[in-house]
Image (cartoon, rainbow, N blue to C red; front, side, top):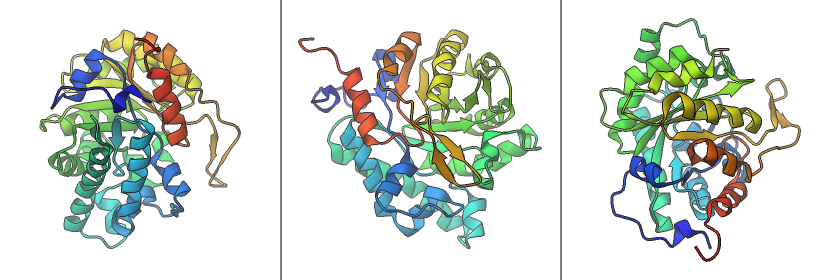
Length: 312
């Protein structure tokens, strides 16, 4: 039995408090679990479409991860934007309802598990709205101020919905990270900042120490790190994030399979080994999980890795 399901915890403990005390387990990829449930995610809105069309599927996917032992559930708002919903004829008022609903769905699923959990409202990059793969390149040709104006309205909606933390995730470059940090600073919600990286650099080709260094003195940021990357890229990134900021590190890579954008399919074999979590912990990781193609069974295996040895 996973200890997270039986341990007694203080009521109202914040995620920051939990990270100061030990390692906290994130969920895995929402899209792959939705596909496993039979959902069609071919729409440009990706999983966010289901907030309007099949919200019960979103809640079921969260519940699958909660049953696997995940203590943090990341909402289906990664690709949820006013602009994206607007292209489907959904007005701003309804779009705001759907974004807020993503937080409520995760909250219901976590509560049903009957143990301590936290909800992270996903704030994806500008490129996710474009739905053309540019979230893995960055450098959109927009200024930091322009990116801040894009992010701020949905940050306000998500923050008002009552999440425990905002997940500023899959950020490809330093400029967008700066914009996101500006967009959240007026809201009393803690955040984590997570870059997408490759070959020891951000996706835009910037040094990781420079990227992580943005949050070194920012109290609102409770963790910094990487997601949506190859597990091998995560190994070194955890070390750099910890050394650069002295903050808890968040790490949730992909399965290791490769995305074929032209064929719109995943290829190759997975390389995500749950045993890697021990090295991540030694390097400073405190918030660990998986991203694309990492499902509930792998999260359950991570939970087993994090469990204390028998007799302790």
